[in-house]
Image (cartoon, rainbow, N blue to C red; front, top):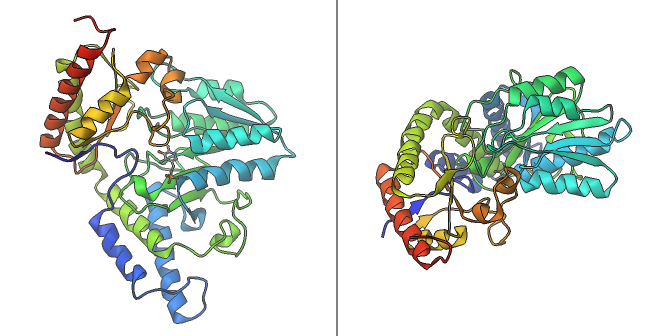
Length: 386
Ligand SMILES: *Cc1c(COP(=O)(O)O)cnc(C)c1O
């Protein structure tokens, strides 16, 4: 049986280059970057090299990059930190209905503490417009946080335009770019981004390490307090090996981005064309063109997403019905519901996310398995009219 991993939006495999770069820092080079001696200085210079690699990948300055424990922590730091810092200026935050839970749950927490949050509705493709953001800004607004690309349906938001609106209105603009960095071009200056979250394990780096870009001049308090690491923006001894691996992974991802994108687009289109040709009653979720090159998400009428995933898994294909964080619950995806899908259609959805290592053979095998699974499940479904 073939083993096919099509859940790269949940996490990616560590790249061999990233692993190689990490090995010395997991073995002989064990110094603490805060230590003054040679062991410490060696570790410190490795962290600083990674900072330069991350900064270069998004058009930032090295001193604008702060390492964290991942995408969730970066999101939480921005939302909680901005709220704490600007409480006297205002209590209003703008976000969207389709954010990752790392953003949504942080916003919900702030609501409990007296903040007001606007959750902008999205259109049928999962998109918000800069105009919607502009209309929602009041003199109490302290932060706009809109994701760069959606983790479930792959829709890419009009980030540059939203950034421009925020800049003109003097409101901080943060984007959760965890799905975008290393996959599509990101330039924080050209895109008017004030703060940006990213996570290494979404671009073939290690898990448990991420970064936050904070534009020079913006001061927000650290979520985690303690030592003075990361210029007081994130306390705790640095995850040196993880940070080094992140730097190597992002450099590799950006260097190969064009080639990887072309590879994935070819296979993604083959996957989409085959699904649409061979399975009736399918609907593509997300935008057909303003979309991450590795994301395929379909609703398949008259079946349950969970049933499909089980069939795929039994045949060696790893897929997802939404975000990894919501699978395990039977609630339909908040993203698909926000896009206006009825409950029963949202329930029957499957997400297949490719990497540059995905092969044509794997894609063809997956379509075979998917077609059979749909046939089997529909044969048992009282709703499907044969
Ligand atoms: C994966 C993901 C996160 C969380 O990142 P972690 O590093 O796993 O904490 C946040 N936002 C989006 C859009 C993601 O896809």
